[in-house]
Amino acid sequence: MTTEAAFIAALRAIATSPAARGLADDAAVLDFGGSRLVLTMDAIVEGVHFLPQDPPETVAWKLVATNVSDLAAKGAMPRGCLLTYPLGADDAWDTSFLAGLQAACDTFAIPLIGGDTVRQPQGTPRSLTLVALGEPAAGVAVPSRSSARAGDRLWVSAPIGDAGLGLAVLQNERDAEPASRAALIATYRSPSPNPALGAVLAPHVTAMMDVSDGLLIDSQRLAAASQVAALVDLDQIPLSQAFVTVAGDDRKARLFAASAGDDYCLLFTAPIEATASLQEAAAAHHTVLYRIGRIMNGRGLSLTWNGEAMSLPNRLGYEH
Image (cartoon, rainbow, N blue to C red; front, side):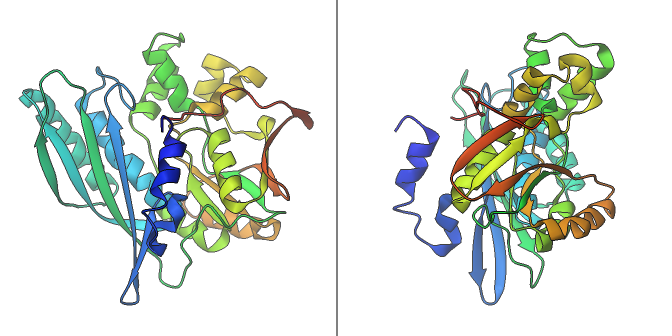
């Protein structure tokens, strides 16, 4: 079992509770006593999800934000989190991490309510884990990945690709002038999920998840979970001005953006008649939504460029 997908497939024989949602969603949804709790757990590993030279404050922020992003995708407001932290020999790193943790918990209104500490062997990469708990709105279904329907439109809630390009800049794979460099790196290190937006969109969507591993691979996953086909219009993918300044706006640049990952925005489907309601809900939160494709009968993922079908790239996104 060398791939993430194979390991998760094997776990499904164990995770048989309805709360697990078949391990095909961003989070678990636990029903008890007439109440519902959304639970998620994300880990970040040095050298995989963050760079060794990243400031500890931003590592803490990213750990919290990636979990809050999962809650947002389920229309759930954060209610608490639990941290597993590896203690090492670097007191300054620990102190800076705690400052970032405090800032993230305050910003996302997610109180720390417990966790665990472990000893990290000297010289090994840091691995940090957070469990986040959220509460969906009463009377509103918790969106899944598996409810998209043929005829739905496919949407995202923010520009794509900045974080991936920020990582490329940090790794000296791209040159960028100072303002664009700072903006792209900040997006990579400090994602900004919006759980309040997820909560107001939830009543209007058919399926919703967050974009973590890349827009293309996550669109493919949503389609597979819903047993439908997804078509993405590459020319409709939203790009920031910083991204365009550094990478351009041609097909190659857009393929990079769509497969880079670490975007932590919302990817969702909704019927065409819900368009006005979606845009009104987003406008109330000073957010613009972007329609990037549609859902069809069939299976799989397809791409168009300026209305013409195009081949899928070899790499759709990140896989462990």
